[in-house]
Image (cartoon, rainbow, N blue to C red; front, side):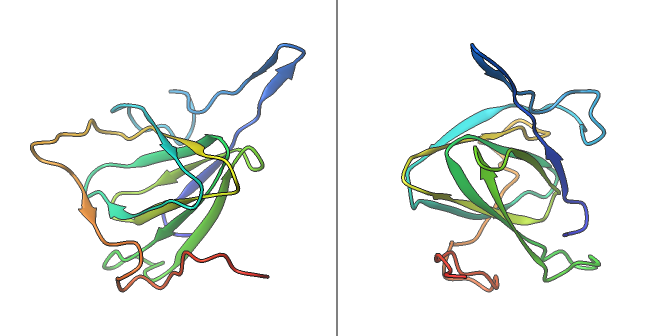
Length: 151
């Protein structure tokens, strides 16, 4: 696992009405601070990658559908520099992923339905000074191919 990445298993509390699922609490061990929360709807097969933040930590989960969330550690001096982590998150695997600052990350909707990805970053987005570094999803130096792999 990339240094600083943490996974929290999420558990829906279900009954005959449906379910309630906590995502992140201020008393969780992995909680740092609240910046904002947003949801992103992504169509099947869409890849949104790559980006990182200099200061911000992201907490990502998928609440509807499924996504492949991929992280790449390109940080100078990191003990896991060059490592890639791939997570399948969503209705089939309810997890929250803590993504440290400077770790490149992106995701691709998998399956036949859109996914709803929720992110809880530790800072608010500032359009005047975005804390964001972007790299194209396919034409870059990151050792990852977004194609489906037959195992």
